[in-house]
Image (tube, rainbow, N blue to C red; front, side):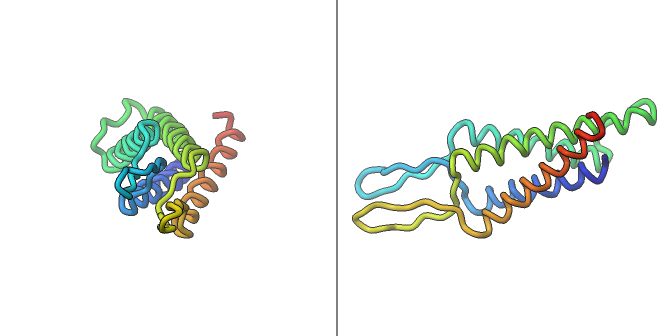
Length: 145
């Protein structure tokens, strides 16, 4: 389970880092006076915050900042729980990105308007996160978790 948790952690961290550094949005509108308004919907923002929170918990657990279980048997259960939480958060975030067509690139089409789309780099980060989530979900399903 530790390897699955690490894979999920790395994929989720990469996606969140990309979203933060590249200004990814899921909403666009004309702002008046030829201005454009790009923003994150409340749902998208909440998913980002939730994923960040689980990432922080995994980091704290890995650094020993959270209390260890009373017995050796508690540690695998905590890892399973964190793995499920991170899997759920990552799946929800990637599903929203796909469903709402979140974007990181805008092309100005002049008087016609603008076009939003996903860069190749963003598509790759989303693809990798989705593949890791799918792989871990299959392993967890086989283990009956």
